[in-house]
Length: 274
Image: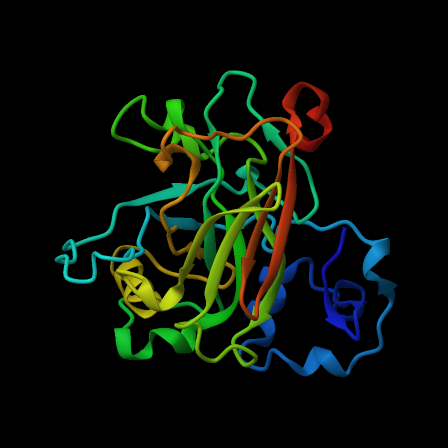
């Protein structure tokens, strides 16, 4: 396994060139000079690789529930604080990898979200300085097992089944996307649009979230903040529409890319849990 960067629709193997073990280490070592990699010669075609999650083993994945204003609710009062939960690294999978549908549930759901990857260590970060801590952005499918999520007021079980969250296809560095505050986000299931909104309609914007999280924990290079989802996820629909084996889920975010995964039979994908 290695990590790389996209150069002319091909991949440069950064792990081989730098000797650093993973993207989080690369970010820690090279931030804020990310972007020089685009001058390197490519090593592989995109068709020759398999994708890992952007950060395969993050120390922290900090997530926010919902977090978008929908049409007609612009005048609604903002809650004082967001609903926050965390995911484990093992709950992630890469672009074009199977999303195993848990055998113990028929309520496997999708949530299209923008992921923020932290670039340098910070504690009690001022909101005005928060965006200087960002290494880049990616797409995230916060795959949720709704009945297990609702076992109690704590979301942990329903958010951490193995490989149920797609994360990718890649990280777009912050120098290429200096303003993430006006990006269209669309989720499609089998080509049908299920979610559509714009990051300008976040209730708690990215800088606020970074500052808030840094009040209670030290943010470190490679940490991931998953910024919440619009309405339209399966359990919010009437009637509810949950994922089935064979469904294709796509999360497309303007100027970031499209994350694609196919829902698979968990019993036939045990190798993905190793």
